Image (cartoon, rainbow, N blue to C red):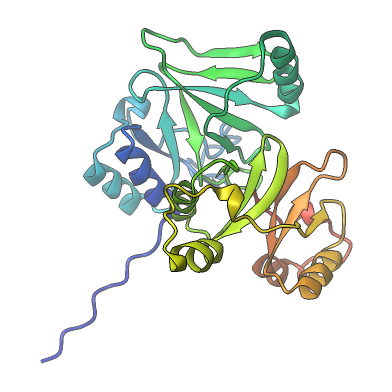
Length: 301
């Protein structure tokens, strides 16, 4: 009698991320997700698409219990993931929204009070940033509009965390800094279930790092990934395209340089917009007009 092979478990990137956050003692919560019809909550004209908790008691249900987290994503496999801020996680988050002047407010505050220290940050699906800082103790209140485009998420608040899906179709993503260790970069790849990361110094893109770089150029030679920095192994020069160019331009560059992913930058300030892959082009080019800009098919950075 032969036994049937074990059922293959579906990869759930947000579940993988949620478990990793829980192991860092960051309580997590499943969130609704964007759908073709709006939000998975199915409410007409939902004002918080893909951002509000799925559980009955909201943030009160947040946990680091891996069993509970696993059951949540068994029930809602497409759920986004949220991290609870405040003393419970040890996090205070600065939410930067450039659509409402957040980048300019951050620049002005830096000139007046000094630049912020390097800290973990993620890019939001809406084009902003979440900057994570250590909670100082006591109680820190949430603050909306600290300055134009700047909010504070702390006690009683939460953030939508990578690799959650935004209503725009972009995903929230962790940034990799040049001084991050290769181990940190590899962990970010694992959390996001990807093999390619842009490496940024602030808003400046300095190179890209792939799982192939880590495996073949470092690990194969016995280099300790905990002590080796990402900037020592990034690929340069960077092949890129602007977000207002046609998909035909992207396809040409990818053929010319024999690459499977292409960095997309904004035309006005060369800020990293996203990454377009061969899969994106294969899925979108035939279905859309040839003049469509890359901004509509690029993956988030």
